[in-house]
Structures are given as C-alpha cells and as structure tokens.
Amino acid sequence: MTYKNSNLVNFLADTWWFGLSKRLSEKDFQDLAALRAEQGFSAVQLVVGVPPEVGPENENAKSAVGFPWTLDGHFNQEYLKLARERIQYLNDLGFVVIVYGAWGHQIEWLGKERMTAWWFRIIETLDALDVIYCLCGESNLWVDEESKLLPAKSTDDLVTSQVVLPLLHSRIKGLLRKAARRLKRQLHKHQFEKRRDAWSFVLERISQRTNKSIIVHPICDETGYEAVSNPEFLSTNTVHTGHDARARNRLWQLPLTLLKNDHTHTGYINLEPWYEGIRNQFWAEDQMFSYWVTMLAGAMSYCYGAHGIWNVGDGKFLAHWGKQTFAQALALDTPGLLGLSHEQYLLWSDPRGETFYRTEGKELITIGREAGEKVIQFFPDVARVHHVPTGKIWLPLQGIFAEALPPEGQVVVFCD
Image (cartoon, rainbow, N blue to C red):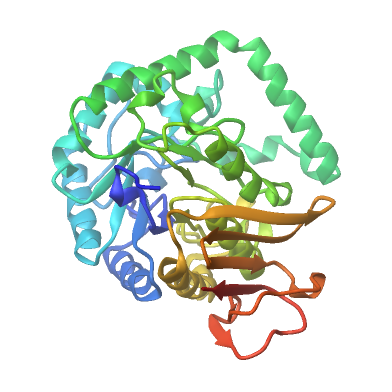
C-alpha cells in the first residue's frame, strides 16, 4: 500500500505531553532527545499549548517563558518561539514532531474562533519545519464538564472526590464506566454534537492554511474519523486504546477491522496504546506485545509512552496515574528494545503484506504478515504452539537473534 503522506509512515514515536513546560528543563529535553535518537526513535508527540490534566493557569502548564495563552485570548509569542526552537532541535536530530495544538475540552475555554486563531499562530510558527499536526488530544473528553480544571487545577485535585470507585472490582468498575459513558452520551447528545462541530470548524480552517499532514487524537470510544464531521480533511485514521489490560485484543483487532473497511487507503495509527508503568502496569513484555501485534495488524507507525516521561513525573505530580518518576522512566530498557525491533521490522516489512492470525478462545496465539514468500510472524508465547516456521529467530525482549527457539516467551520469525 502506498500512502500519500510519507511522514506518517514507519515512525516510532515517544510521547512528551509536558515537553514544552518548565517541568522539562532545556538540558533534560536535549538529553532525552539524544537518548531516544540513539535508541532508534524517529518521532515525538508534543503539546504546543496547554498540556492535558491541568488548567490553563496551573503552574505545570507554564513554560520557561510563561503560559502558552490566557483565558482572555492573549497568545504568548515567546512561547511559540520556544516551541519553534525545540522542534527545530528535534528535527535536526532526525525526528518528525507530532504537534498537538490543544486538548479536546480546551476549545470550550477559548471558543472555536480563538482556538482557530491559536492554530493559525502554530502554523505560522512551525509550518516550515518537519511536523505533523494533531488537531487536539481526546477531542470529546469531558463533554459538559469542561470547567473541572479551571482556572488552575490539575486532575490531582479531582481524585480526592472519587474515593468509592477505586475500591470496586476492576470488572465492575469497567462496566460502570461503560454504562456511564453511554448514559452521558444520551443525556448530552447536543453537547457532543456541539463539541464535534467546534473541532470540525477548526479542522476545516487549518486545513486551508497548510499542506502538512493533519490527524486527530480521539477518546477511546471512537476513531479519528468519527471524532469530526469532516474526516476528509484528515490524513489518516487514528485511535487511542488507552491504559486498560482489557485492550489487549483491541490492539490487533481494531486495526484489522478499520483497515478492512478503509476504502480510501489512508491508513491507521494508534496514538496512545498502554503507557509503560502507568497504574504500575504494562512493562516490557506488554510493550513488545503491543508493538508487534499493532504493526503486524497493519498500522502505519507506532507510538510509545512511558509514565514519568509524558508527565515529567516526580512521584507526586499526576501520581494517581502511578508514581514512576522521570528518572525511573528514563532508565527503562524497553525503549531501546523497541528501537531494535522497529529496525528489524523496517528491514523485513513489505507494504503489500496481508495479515494472518490464529487464536484459541480469546487468546492470540500468533499473528503475522506475508507478502509472497516473505513472512514476519510473532508468537506471544512460543510454548503455546506446536509448529514454528523455519527462519531467522528474533527475541524481542532481548533484542537479539537466536540460533534456536527458546522453550517459552516472545518470538518473532522472519522468513523469505
């Protein structure tokens, strides 16, 4: 398959939502960039504006040169200059930068006209650089509850009021949340339509100002194409599968479903799969599973995130998502292993490939892609299969080729 937007294809991205805030110093920014470049990453997700989880006047939204914008509509040109300098630095290291202009609910704080004006400033500042534009993160988040963080709160301030839900069994919690989302959509149908129309308004206008790729980051219940009323202005379809163990099969089933029904051949990217360490879960084995099943199911590119990196954590800020710090996340081996696997995937993948898979009950036993005699096949646990094809044996959790199959664990086999 050939895609018209080449910078959307085959990148390996890291996620730095607070990367322009004063939480990440210039030195730490540069050191993190150098490390990820060395590890084989080729893209960074960055918010140019107010990051998620905080209000516009929260100190954690502030950069070294002040807040991005104020509620009265003042845009900070020095902040945009800082964004350009840091993104140019990333470009010089070989990264394409996925620029998020806002988070979904923030359009209610600024209004669609001023949000459009903010996006125009972003485009004027960054359009000459190697960037992909993401309209917003979680476009339909907190519909009819947009004031929760105003003016200077963070979600840390909100969790103290949610003392009952964490005590419930995880399956019951999931059912309650799902039922609550359905009820909310029914009760606030007009507000959801209003939010979708507002972001669609911004999307149409910024698409007339740039030739860069444009995507949107949706909430877990919908796709990028469903998040707006004018998906023809988007460059590819996107999802956000979130941070729940029950998304395990969704990681590979969703791309298969969406790509099967995609007659425009614009592709698919999961912008937010499991973050490593979030809620003290999803470590290396889960990360490598996520990478291989996502890519072999047909995704164009892959996005990684680590709790502690995305929020520049200190063990206190946004610690309701987990206490892993920036320093602890920086020391994880997984990003290096992802880079090594991605290198091998790029060497062996063929855009003409077709996906195949086998399950037992709800458990994935193997998934792969084949193009003629060329095959890439992933086994989440090689002990579960009786026959493995002859080929080069890759061990994702070690980042090496092996002479013989291990008795158990993750294996990728490359055949040609």
